[in-house]
Image 1 (cartoon, rainbow, N blue to C red):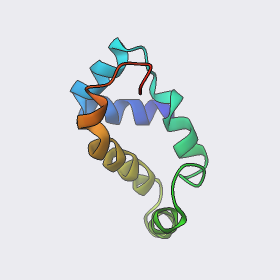
Image 2: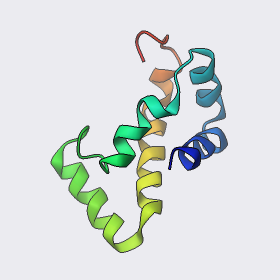
Image 3: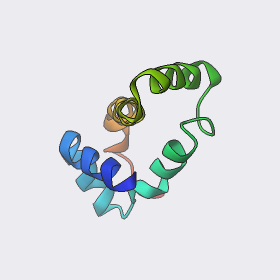
Image 4: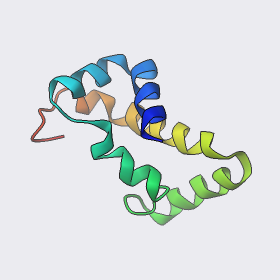
Length: 86
């Protein structure tokens, strides 16, 4: 799961991926919790229920699409933060 997540980040968010590498922030530091719990530990129930509904119909690609959507939403902010604030 983490391998796929890291590859997707590099493909769709190369600037963010490089920034996180420079700040020594690994995807496993935040993506693991999202993927292993299917977002239940980090996000509100209304969002999680939508992800789960789609996951049950379409499979794992929904989980990765959600991850990419979350990263896209936060990319602008994350690019300006140092490791301590990420």
